[in-house]
Length: 350
Figure 1 (tube, helix red, strand yellow):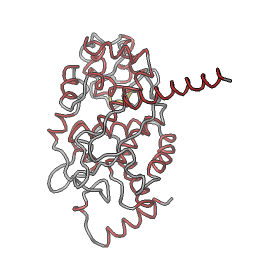
Figure 2 (cartoon, one colour):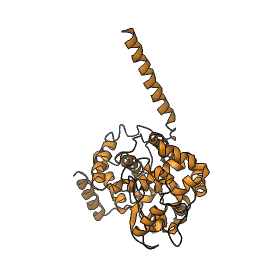
Figure 3 (cartoon, helix red, strand yellow):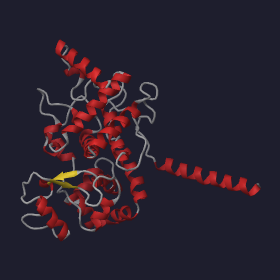
Figure 4 (cartoon, helix red, strand yellow):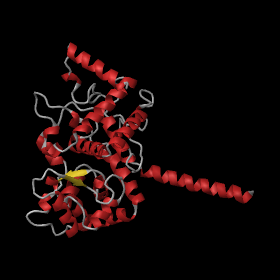
């Protein structure tokens, strides 16, 4: 009896220690955000998003990568303010027309706004498009087999979109080397581990040929496996081919650590991918993630939470948009708009 009690006590200590360790690894959150921000105003928020995305991703698993990438492209430019969702206006073109964003999935934008409609039907105009995008990115990871994690919430939506130059200068291009990758992320307070962990998002999704054919033509990149290169040439016979290929050749629809195994076998698609293994500063991190999926998951979660708090607007800053594609001040108060919004609310119920 005594030994059983002692064993139970020791097990509790071990479990408690593990919980403390996990909690210690969770990044601090910025002022204005909270782990339970919508507990009172929209307690069903996350279940609404998860339920809808389960169907969306089951119907088309590629949408998971699209939603995850949308969150990245939003946060890295001028912070996680959903500015990438805004349509252009008389003040200038939107971020969506900037070259790095031309390949963002059109369906991703529609999914976010569909989620917004459903949430507003239940909770009113209480949840920002920025928070919806962050939760959708997390659920995209979970629904493709990746780790689950809490998302700090309370972001407000931005009032302005970034210029094309700002978009280009803040996002990492596929032809970037590791020095550029590390410099871009260091400017945002993210380190080498964050850089390698966040790159692991390429374990799901597809890429257009034009993003990597510079590694195939006119000469093959010496860091690329020959068989892998030959297979890519069959899919992308010219430098301007419109075809697409999987980012991760081993398990393209599963969020796992196989992306890093690809890199170790010289089967990374982009220069920005493969150079992480070629460069001495990041090679060891790639290797550690390739041999230990749990470690990758742990670091990816930490890095995602850190990235998801870049330059967020909180409190009296920004706004909660009535529609994700336009600022509230852009809203035209006319009968057409009223009819449109009634239709949106009605459709969100079904």
